[in-house]
Image (tube, rainbow over all chains, first blue to last red; front, top):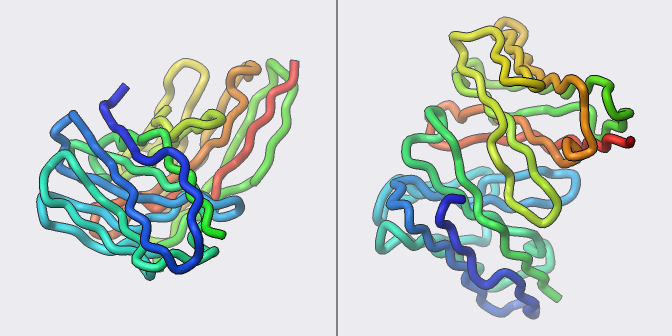
Amino acid sequence: DAGITQSPRHKVTETGTPVTLRCHQTENHRYMYWYRQDPGHGLRLIHYSYGVKDTDKGEVSDGYSVSRSKTEDFLLTLESATSSQTSVYFCAISESPANTGELFFGEGSRLTVL
Amino acid sequence: GENVEQHPSTLSVQEGDSAVIKCTYSDSASNYFPWYKQELGKGPQLIIDIRSNVGEKKDQRIAVTLNKTAKHFSLHITETQPEDSAVYFCAASSRAGTALIFGKGTTLSVSS
């Protein structure tokens, strides 16, 4: 299994509070991604990173920000959580661009916003 | 925008039958089409992929076909087994090639 650790794995928070999810990898892969998974919507890309300090938006980036200050860590921040951000969040990594090889996914972080 | 449609959303088959899942993509620039399998409580895992210069690829009981003209690709599972029960996602590479756009998933149930 690829060395990907997501934390926390489960979190319950209240509307309006900030939340940060962390993805840590031990593979030294250049590319990292944050997806959210919701019933009826599948996996939707939030943000991705193609190198340290290099990030770009995905299809559902509103309300989320990311940071990547070192190769191994990719942080996803909800500045002010809303109930619509209740979801399961998956981090993924890849050695090369997404159109050339495999994405390895973490185990997911379940976030509930009350 | 870039979009991937996946059908059916649920599929129930008897053990030993075949299962087919179909996807269509919108961006003609997409050139990579992987399929991922997600078991309960886990992250998705790649099971097979195909590139735009290939029409069909097979790996034991699973195969993928691609029709670039129609922008369709399909996953075929033969001789299904209970352990094939999972959620399957198709995906297509984005125009820039830097991310994958996923379909909404198909829940496959194989009963013995």
